[in-house]
Length: 257
Image (tube, rainbow, N blue to C red; front, side, top):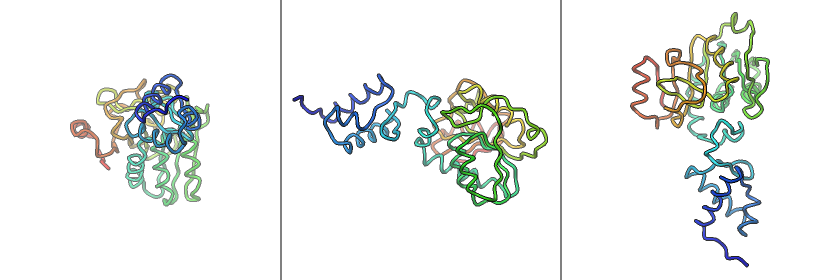
């Protein structure tokens, strides 16, 4: 009978398996190492805290896969407290009776939860989960553009032509992305999603960006909005002071939460 591994040996083995297969399950690891599921969950929790992986239902995926290929359900588990604070702060900038735009990001989903007490809102969103959350309130009218659905992100994508963008009075838009940099502005990974997001950004009077500090300074595949198009940025207090100062020097209001 092979000896049981010390914890560090077990952790190293889990990391190797993640890199080789892209996924590990609690049940499989428990059988491989001959330890309880509780022990494996504890190992995975530790590896998540130290930045090696992201926990999923029943297992984990490696953090270095990048958010661009992770499902909405997995991304819901990342930077949760920061996203909740950002969403709550952004919701305070919405007034009853307004028409606004929310993208399909998990931060927008958190924001939607804080909008449920508002009255007479009209919300245009590309996010299916965001729309379902908003439908819990009878005081919010929800609009979803037609088009292909990106399954992993639960988002409508692609080019969308509709008179609402030309004739609707869309006061404010709230958008996230994979990165926000001083050179490229707000960027995202999926070209089809970016194409629709650009149209929405052009249609609103005020552009608000919702990004946690981990995305500051990063650049993804395509630009959604230049810094000149952005009116306000919501991020957490861990944001680098020099980056925040640079945004403010360009006339962008920065809300730290």
